[in-house]
Amino acid sequence: MALLGRTANGLFWMFRYIERAENTARLLDAGQRIALTNLSSEPDEWQSVLVSAGVEAAYAAKHQDHDPDTVVDFMLRDRDNPSSVRASLETARTNGRMVRTALSRELWEAVNESWLVIQRRLSSPVTARELPAVIDLVKRQGALIRGTFQTTMLRNEIFDFCNLGAFIERADNTARILDVKYWLLLPEHSQVGSALDNFQWRSILRSVSAHRSYAWEYDGEYRAVNIIDFLMLNRRMPRSLAYCYTVIEESLKYLNRNYEVRHPCFETATEINQRLSDTSVRQTIDGGLHEFIEVFIRDNNRLAQEIGQNYRFYPTA
Image (cartoon, rainbow, N blue to C red; front, side, top):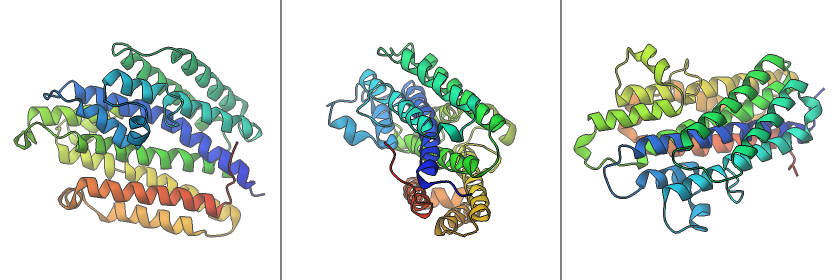
C-alpha cells in the first residue's frame, strides 16, 4: 500500500532537516578552520559560510557586518534562520512527531533525545572556544539518529523517502562546503598549491570527517585536485556527490517498483548521476568548479521539487 503524500512529505523533510542541522555545523567547522589561516584583515571566511549556506540575505536583514560571533550565533541558534541548527532540529522533530507511527520507537526516541540535548546546549550563546565542542556534539547526535535509523527501520518505502531527504540534503551540503573554499580567495593567486592552500583543503576534509579516509584512498598526498575528486566523484566516499546520487537513484528505483510507476523524478536523478559518471575532476576544474557547483545545486533542488510533485507531498504544519 502506497504512503499518503503527507506522510511521505513528513519523512522526507524530517531527514532533510536532521541532515541540515549537522551540515550547518560542518559549514561552521569549515569556516572556523579556514579562518585560522586567513592572512587578511577581513573576515571573508564567515561571509563565505553565509553565502554557501544560502542565508546571506536573511543574515543581512538583521546584521550589518560579518562579526564571527554574530555569524556563529545566527547559524547555530537564531530561530529567524530556518537553517540554523536549533531551528532545523525543531522542524525535524515536528515532522517526526507528525509521522511517529511510521517510525520505530527507537528512532523517534533518538530524534527526540537529540532535540532535547541540542536545545539545552544552545539555550545560551556559544563562545569561539566552545564552538568545536558544540560542533562535535551536533555531529554525535546526528550519528545517533542515523545509526538508529539504519539498524531499526524496515527497508520499505518509508526507508526510501527518509533516504531521499537525507541524501539530497547531503549532496547539497557537500557542494556548498566545496563552495566555501571557492569563495575564500587566497591573499595571492600565487599561493594556489602552496602550504597554505593545501592546509585549507585539508581543513575542508576534516570538516566532513573525511581526513583519514582520504589518506587511505590517495596515499596521504594532499592535492586540491584529488580532494575535489574525492568529495565530488569518489563513489566509496559516503558524503561525495556521486555516492549521494547512487543512493538517491537506488531509492527512487525501489519506489518505482513499489508504486509500479516510473516517475519523471527518476529520470532526472538518473541524468544527474550519469553526468557525475561522465565527468572527470580535470574537466570540472577546467570548466569552472564554482559554475559546476552552481548547476549541481540548482538541479539537486529541482529534483527535490519533482519528488514532491510526483509523490504528491502536502505541506506540513
